[in-house]
Length: 295
Ligand code: ADP
Image (tube, rainbow, N blue to C red; front, side, top):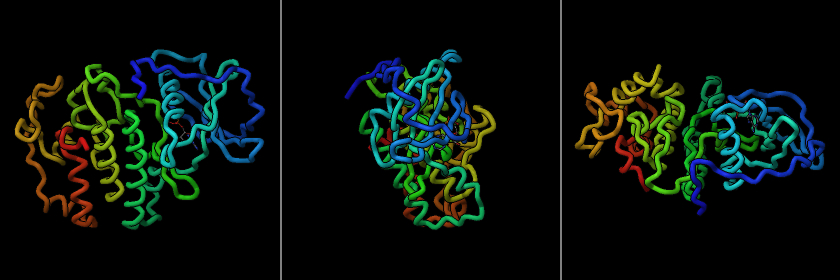
């Protein structure tokens, strides 16, 4: 295992790696720090996505996302993790060549003309968990799991994408940032400002995605960070010292409105199509105390 500090290092290919290996055809998306193009690998005629990052525009933090994405995708080769095919640089840009995946889970959830069978949900969940397991066994946390970062290949394979917030778990005493994961998918320990956390934060996100796949609407859509705490605990009960020892010592824990935990019957009503086994799994993934989720 490589124990990375806060500044991951990455081997970039030389500037001479040629753009002529790829065609850059049309723009298909724009992210926080990159423009994404559909292209082709000239030799194989394979469709690829070129994520073009403008290095000249780097301000604090943005360059780290690109470095993280390259570093972790180079380390993580797995059928359920997006493939980084190549990296090359041109004068002002860093280009990530990724496999082209035209669809994501958010698009599918929002398209109400598509009926989800329980086998679809099981399969997406299993592929997500296989990808997450691969990250965790390589001591890497994804830290931004959400439906639009779960991309779907034309053959139906689901792949984890967007490793711009990922990081490796090294020294357990090292402080980590609690300002990670898109709000609706953020685990309770992060909402309370914990600086020492584990893969349990990714499992929480997967649990909330699982709920969203069943409901077809976001499960815990907080309007802002304060509201997220309220929405989360209204749905799942307010953590107490009894169910989560030492919770009150977390930096941003304060006297909260105390909501009771939902009864099994309430959860059955909320997830009316879920089987008892699906509910068991959902309950396990959304345990408030992160220690109850560690393997
Ligand atoms: P964000 O900053 O929103 O996380 P990205 O920078 O990773 O997003 O990508 C921006 C958009 O480009 C995505 O929303 C998606 O539409 C498209 N995109 C990104 N990666 C791929 C890919 N590998 N294949 C196809 N489209 C992609």
